[in-house]
Length: 547
Image (cartoon, rainbow, N blue to C red):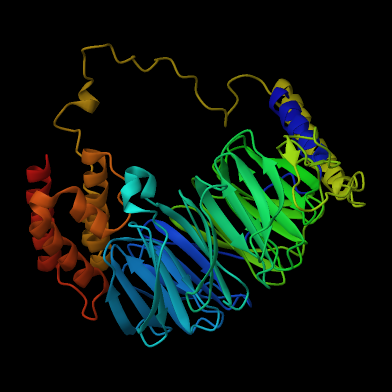
């Protein structure tokens, strides 16, 4: 009976939760063997691209189309016809069929990448602070330098953090530790803010290029096409994610205090939502009616334009990447090894879904965090968060909970009455257990668990190999080597190039190992068992040398 009452209580608790309190169900889920370092979704939702040790292109319904090459940075054209990828200093343009169209080497490793929606130009930035504009045929159209005067020493260095395009690529924004830089799509400099905006972390551009949102460790600001500041919002914590609606009507940003905040074009705070962890990425639909955010708490949050929670989606690990279609009707979400597709049209607004509710904010200098507007007056918006309808979706859940609880209670009561009416020891009853299992005493090993009987579990690639999944075994060996190098060095190892840089002394042997693993895992011919065993021997030898 006690169990039945507990179950009844759980049912009532679940029934009392508002709609949206339980994690939503994705349209499809796809697991990726390598770590996902980038995510792209075409505006119409017909293609999904993930980057990492393996570029993976999926159809809109989740069907894998191909999985080849390596690219830590990725970008996709609007029609999915062209794909740009960067791995270290290598910049490559691929076709939709994974064929290499051209490849160029930058002077240093790429740190940011963008591809024009029509595929006519690729913009790549390297870690030296230079920006390269390539035509679709691989011709270098222009080069821009965000560094300062060399005589300034360290002050001249420029660490580029982000690159963003306007809707058709007419304008390109670049933000670095030195400031914000604005170019035409052909690479001609329009203006630069090198003194008033330093320590930049993220940038986003509206569809027309008339609005540029820029984030730093201390603030978020909105600028117009001429570089004039429309408003500035001082932040109590560093900005972790930034997005702007294509129509420029909404700027959404996440902070290290777990909050997601929305401002309007005039600098008015519209709403604030509290997640369970830092916001890692955020996407906004074209008109600002849908917002999708990924958090370090392992959840993706779907909100409407008023900041009301529509749904949540649970993944394994941090949600590092999110993307929405142009109309905001569907989106994709990615953790380290998992991609899901979500619908944004079926949610019911709910202010509480296991997290604090979003709060409407009336714009004023003292609302939320300090906010100042310059060069354009801030106006009080007429739209404020409207509380959602009370009890939407709850009655049906309550009825189901009560019904399930009643059935459980009744069954428990009948079972108890039957047991009380039956004589002890009646045929069919289970015999009493007279002897207890002896506890394991420290220092003693029961006979059933003697050392001879304890077997070391096989390595994961061995299990795959023994079950006939040779390609999977090769991928696992490659992944184990990446994990080993990451553990030994403590470095952030994302691509094979990172692994080779981490151990320059073993570079040749590691390069040969990864090349063999790629050939066996993704080549046209199925690998033989002997090939995988040879790869295993190379792994064990290199692991011993790495220590």
